[in-house]
Length: 482
Image (cartoon, rainbow, N blue to C red; front, top):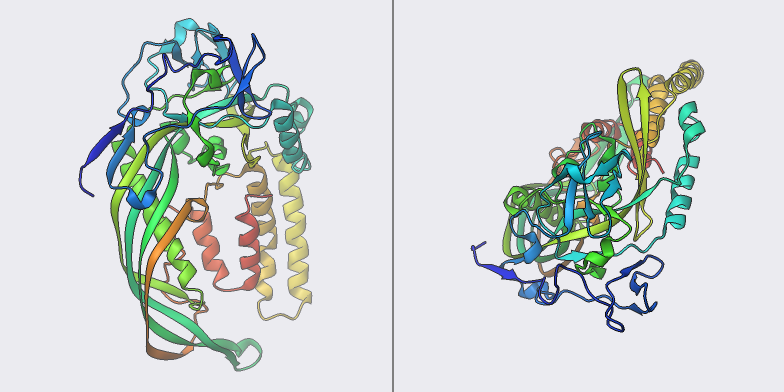
């Protein structure tokens, strides 16, 4: 893509990013989370929010690189919107100092003071207002935790209450992409399945038709959403990866940034510039392109192995956004070790994900019992793959642990991001008929591959290629434990 950069001034018309009431001129304004409107506390007038002007809405026409004012490189500002560093957990919390001189950390609920402030960095181009009030969020969190009470730690069950949940705006960069995709490879279509031999010598074989395949199309992607706070993107070993897992948001309803939306809520600052996220966005663009092509490959039920993947970006549009989340936090103390657990609710879609402390002795005890029943079943049941019963205790433990901790939960950008394909060109040529294959899926198939897929999912993919039971297990794990 050529370096043709256009900066769109998304902050025009606002003074310090704060709008006055159009009826009485008051600045005593806050968000009504029940309907997403701004409400004047002086005259009680409610008014519609503004949309950002100047950004490209027709992605077919997107050329070069368009950047909103709020997505430019970070420069420390001096207005009332300040960032405070929590001296307990290290989180950085943004508040409006014109409204308050203190706040609480939304991660650990430690009290912050004006003396702990650091340069804020930047304000966003757009904001997505809260559409769930606190009571609605409390009910969703209580329902989520209620499904996980059986193995929850007794102290957690005793101390659990949702009165202390906090509304938080998290920073993201939203990227629209206009691209052209070219893919070349081979795919297999299952012709028949049959078996030979008997008893322990019985084997399953597959015949398949091999095709040479090409796919070429235009691809418009709306709103690739990436965390612009570096700590939120580092999900390995953290339980705060739930923030990633509750995406996507209905970003088409974002409105022009106004500091009034921040009143009553906290937020985090953006600490990452566009150049630092460009590679990540490129990887996600290729993932989305690969999965978009799958819509044209349904007949290749054994898989497709792409050998040539080329995505040409004709235009990109970057804008900074604040997106709303209700956050519950709990600190688990074991000796000198502290572990924070979180439950997060998407304040627009009600999507929820979280981590609940596990009572490990109870989980291990029941897993051993399940394993014993599995061993008994292996001795009793006459089944070619009876050895699989030896895995049942481990599988039970893994399923329960995943349901309560959700460390591998993530936003499935490859399928959940909005996109549109156009000008599709398809070439399919039969090149060989393969017989007597022993692998149930095509060797080297990568049309379902996602960059950075977790190790646990790769392990499950291997098991799934050997038996249908593991396919069922994997589909349940990938639902995030719900």
